[in-house]
Length: 415
Ligand code: SF4
Image (cartoon, rainbow, N blue to C red):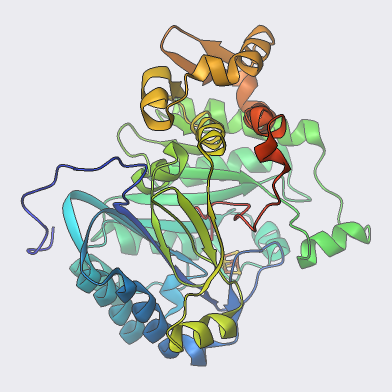
């Protein structure tokens, strides 16, 4: 732990759903844009990185004074694509504007092939204590399909480099890649486990509108993996990772006991967080906002002393309660009735009694007196269950209000 980590005053004085102690910083630069990516990223514009870091610090400085932080997440893009000197600038921005609280978690996303021993030392010396590596798959043809510019050996080397200094490592894996068979996915899971990570994120490949991958599917050049195979892959992950001692603590995330990504748990609790940088979302004092995803617009706005927020919305209590349920049901711990009432001022059963009863009868939810959780069958249909928790909004006048550009997706780790 760095010597200036705050020693006292670590107890919260305000509700965590209103006052943030979680920070997201976005670094949009990548060496190359992968075919499936719809994150706020740019490739071939590294000459803008120093200007971007200046703008990022200017945006962060709107906080006016250093703030306590329990979790920090630097995502992208590929933060470790920055040069050594730029990475140092970025880490110093965090140290200048945030006071790390005892037991803090500070994650940086990295791609294999962008790390060397000096960069890992730099990260560790500044207090970074968690690395999330975009491994995706250990099969070379599938890495080529995804247009990833690293091989499986680079993933293994990166884990070795990080392990020397940083003890908490997460790997991202993608399944349901066209051409991937169930057996190949199981090999990927075993290859990942052999690297002994503390945490694994597993995402089914999605076809985001406008990406080259989506266009190829539209033109019939790419055939998605059959739904049954995709489901079998997800179940294989649940089984193999449980056997290896991992806890399934969120629909797409698994960890060794006690190694949950605490930053992402803030999102799934629907607690408050700051977001800075291109396309970053924030949720502060009940107001949800997202920055522009246009790099030049971001630079121009911040340099002119204006807010880069593209959209901002103060959620109605009903919307906030429904969204809280929708996010919390994704967690292994599910929704705790008492905490939910404290956080939202709504009784869970008054608000969502109908869908909870329906899904419990269908075997998708398990309902004890205190808690509602997804069952194994429910995890396979998590999006369906979660979206049904928005029914009260649709049937109220709130549901008729236009969507003022609320961010459709929460930024989580998955470079
Ligand atoms: S998938 Fe990751 S590495 Fe590829 S372009 Fe997107 S952010 Fe960059």
